[in-house]
Structures are given as C-alpha cells and as structure tokens.
Length: 249
Image (tube, rainbow, N blue to C red):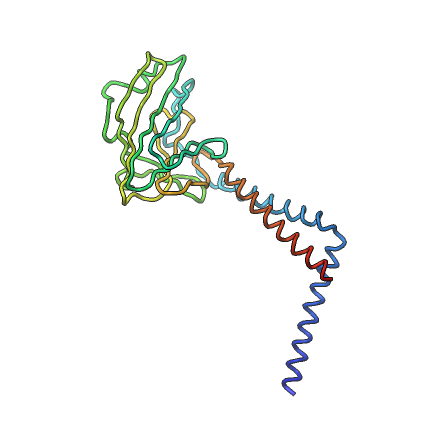
C-alpha cells in the first residue's frame, strides 16, 4: 500500500513538472526565440551598466592629492621601466603600473607647461633629491574606488627621487625608483606625485591588473567590456537551451 502511494506521489510530481515545462514553452513559443534572447540580453546589459556605474554613487568626495590651481596649463606624461605591465587609456581608466613584490622599477615623469614656470612649481627652495620622496599613498578600496591614506613604509613601498632636470622653465623630468619588498601589501595604490595635474597614477603591487573602480570617480571601460562579454555568453547559453527544448517538444 505504501509503495503504491509513493509511486502515485512520484507520478503526480512528474506530471506537475511536465505541466510547468509545457507552460513555459507555450508562453515562450508565442515570442520568437531571437526576440526572447534579445530581451534577456537587454536585461543583462542594464544590470551590467548598473554594476559598472554603482560605485560612483557610493564613493565619497576625495580631496587628498587633488590637483592644486597651479596644475592648470600643465600636462603630465609617464614612462615606466621594469614593471610587469603598463595599463593605459582608453581600455583602462588611468595609467596603472603592475609591480610584483620583491622587485623595483623606474618611473620617468615629464611635465610640460608652455605658459608656466615649472622651476617654481616643482622645485621650491629646500626641495631636492630624496630617498623618501613619497611618504603617503592611497590604498584603493576595490568595492567603491575610494582610498585610505597609508604610509608607504606600512605597505612595503619606497619611492626614491633619483633625478630632476629642467629644460628652461617650461619642461621638467623627474625620475623615481619604486621598490616593493617581498612582504609588501598586495593592493592598488593611488600615487600622489607632485602636481599630477588630472593625470592620476596608480600602482598595483601584485601580479594581475586591477579592473575595479578608481578614485576620483574614474570608471574602467575594460570592466564594462567584461560585463558585456558575460552577458553575451549567458544569453547565448539560454538561447541554445530554449532551442533544444523547443525541438524536443
């Protein structure tokens, strides 16, 4: 008697499952598969856009290291040597260098100010070559792109200003040697170089690029491209599953 009831129960569950599957197919058959797939893709695309932009709404206002008024009219460019990778726009939101722990690299920073005086901006009295040129960096929060001021000695980093040269008063080249100890913290850091002038520099200590949101409400296009790729793959899988089920029924 119990076996009969159990068999009857399994049969009823199977019938309900079959009815639900048939109902889903009946509802979607009225909508062409390609249109349904487009709808799924659009929904995923909207979700991806929200995920990409959302950190901007939660990122606090940042004033640390923000370019001073003297930055207007000054352009900055970077040339790195000895880094694992160099990531730049347009795929990435800002210049980012990858430095593995236990290694060092050099960074050449060039300033151009056709209508300014860089000898006053970059080389005020008492400032020269230094073995502790940058004592504080900003550790980036991967959730919303904000950062926390951190001493370089606390995260295993060292910045040495090894050379400084001027071409008249309109051009300057500063060279830094950046070192990361073997015990350095694996993270991405905002490097507040002197007069970085709307060209923020980021240093990732580790082995892989950082793709998340950056300070100053900078979005990384590469992250949206990855979201878009995932949305396309998910849509393709759903389309293939629906196509297979429609053939079976």
